[in-house]
Length: 380
Image (cartoon, rainbow, N blue to C red; front, side):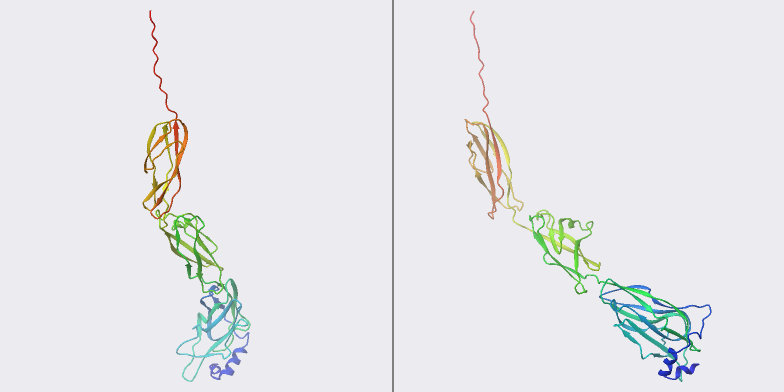
């Protein structure tokens, strides 16, 4: 029977295609051709390789495989011998009709070991990979069956050149998007004292999937509690609270981008709070004085930036005299008035930034009346 493998290409593959279907039986052994792994996935930016494996075969010397797939989900880039029949000391003959059909979704691949004048082939028994199929995803969120055609595929034994019966185990491949690879923020600073909702910067992402869409979120607030100071609306990072440079000038946040396929990428950003000249703050006060009397008191301001400032009298009291000698002042109340009065003041820093206007309320109390005791004398 060994001469059959010496006759040449045409006769060789004529024999392979026309072998008797019922001429061989492997007693007590069930040979299986399977997709390994039976379930796998491939990302759109990467290639994946699966094997067509033969299990528990006896005296294998050649095979012909026809494999189907959905070309809308994957495209096959390469098919090579898996090594089970490949040996450096053996002559190997590949079918001239081996093809990859990415239009109709079909792979045809066959090979046979053959004798020559100086070498006698050794049939292979056991389990191993017949072929390796490398493919890439066309788009994400799709699935395709990898089907082994049990009618047109065949295994050939030696020395009888009969077809070895087998069963098949098909596989499935799902396609996934590639994860985003980077997040960019157009600006990473915001002035202090700005209201909640102030824009910090615009977010964008890098992804190898053309035309992918993204959503952004702040994640892991336990590790990054500064997340609470910010929010994301669409692709805009904005403040969630006003910030005070003098209290805290840098915030560390963690942003996640998620693509349309559910893949995500996280990146940590440091947001700088820029210092703004804070206006000095004038503090309100309340004083009491009797009519016609005077009271000494002080007015005060503070400046978060530590700038020096001057006091300005905005409105004067209506019922008394107030020489302007801040911060220590003396108010003298009118003699003939009791009731409420007030004056307003503010502070202006060295950069001419005026602060708030504060009010000092004055309560002018009625003058306490003192009565001299009256003595009555009676004569007896």
